[in-house]
Figure 1 (cartoon, one colour):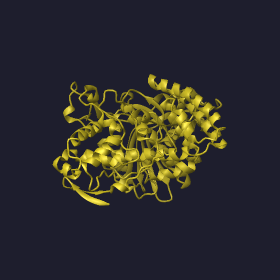
Figure 2: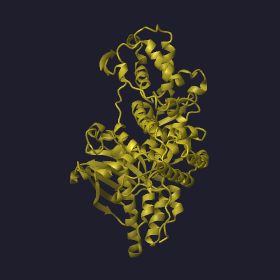
Figure 3: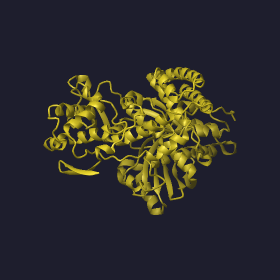
Figure 4: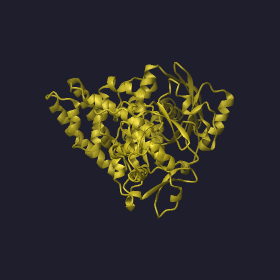
Length: 572
């Protein structure tokens, strides 16, 4: 490692030869294309999957510690989570709100459910503090024992149908559950020091939650158990002795919904090393698996998974006509892909040949295939979950010249260098943060006010400007010397150099372009989380489901639960 000072800052920087590449991995121009990222699905490396494997292998236990809920369903519930290392508690507040207050946007001030995941024990003093602050969410201030702060609203239609049916001694209508897929949907799940709660650094040496977003996913998973316990309790209150519990298959089928808007998109732009790490680990898995010979046992499992995926896509209910068409086409394409697998098994081929064949089909079907293929090789894929965290340092090594930087720009950032930003459509949008709730929003440049407060998310434009400036400089000039004279380029230069030497690098998207779809960024991150059932509600927000099809807490297992489908059950 070497150290270099730029604009008064001393940085630890890797030498150039510390950066490694892997020619067996797919080209970043393919992987980091925003349209492909917008077709991603859950894989074995998704956070919900790695969390449940850890819970199973380490024998985590969940117990109900407190249930103070009135007959109308309001009150306080506490679950105790016991691991070999620590006790935790999920504290849930069920609140009575008016229907008009039940909105999913960040401007909401009331929610059906607010909850917090807490390290250690909860005494009366801490519980009182939580009662006074957790329901307020952003307006409250919480203890540093809190590692996750979140809120959720109920699907009134599913909630009421479940309670009424179970109270009457009947199972619910499967079609109603299929249309939604959850009882509760989260509208925000905060970690990492937000609003006074614990920083992620506290968890980095915690063997339970040292993987990114694992604490948040755990809180959501326990919330799913609460949602089931909640409807069972209220059905019993309403129906008495005739009340029944929901069929186990339907319990597994119900996950936790999530409503996500533009607020998630800046994360992927502002944390490029994290995104590179996520996608690089997945691509490492794809590279190794693609070299495996096609075996009969793998064909059998893969075909079963692909057929299940076809059924899953047919059962997904979405109001978005474009997503409907994508799902329909993927169902047709997967049928053709399955037919080719039958041919390939007689040709002594590797999976790489199948992946190449799939390129003629839709991106949606290609990504479904990769998710299913990785599912067949847990021994290859699962160890990579330990490498999903990233060092976010952006740095330039000593001795780098302008020539070196231009080579990186020409080879890894051609997608940005070639954009003509004098064309209005290439900087049509500007991103800003609303004053009321600090919510990221999009405005039309030159028409809507606020471009003077534009967020620095314009990486493609900054890269383009850096390139145009550097080509006018002497090739052999020191880059450090240039940056000392032109410090406005220091940040983007560090990013270009660092990401240009990563496996996948930056997402290849100009977020200012008129045709840019933020939905692709949302879909990418949600797929890494492990979301399913993508239901875009506009081009700027989407509803998904987490833990749909996952095992329940009392039956944890490490096996696959990819592409959940509606189970067949008896009516009573």
